[in-house]
Length: 131
Image (tube, rainbow, N blue to C red; front, side, top):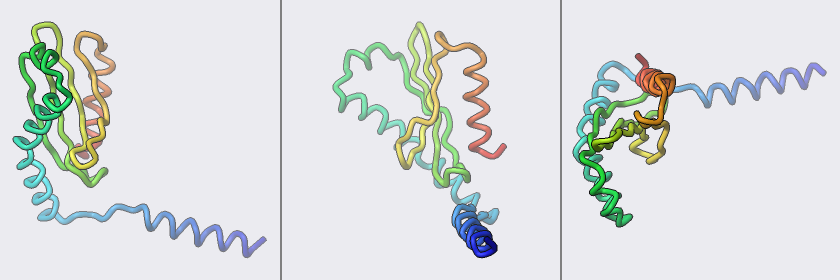
């Protein structure tokens, strides 16, 4: 029984050690933020080319504008994240996306969402920015 407990504690320690995040120095964090900020135009081009690639020309004509609102570094995900929205005269959609993995983390549309969804979206952004 004692051996099982010791093995369990050791395995747990190894797993936790592997999961811990490396703390970045202030200089490293600043560089990551600068690097992520430099991707804004490339991200906007990627979004537009994605629309063209999917041949959504009719859909693209529906959108008045596409904005990359913010690009930031997330220590939690060790990646650059961005917020973009597309809008027309009727509504606006907001997306939180991981630039590296292209994962859509969260989104909401203003005409179909309550303030609860907007609040959850903003809460997630703050959490990932460590604010």
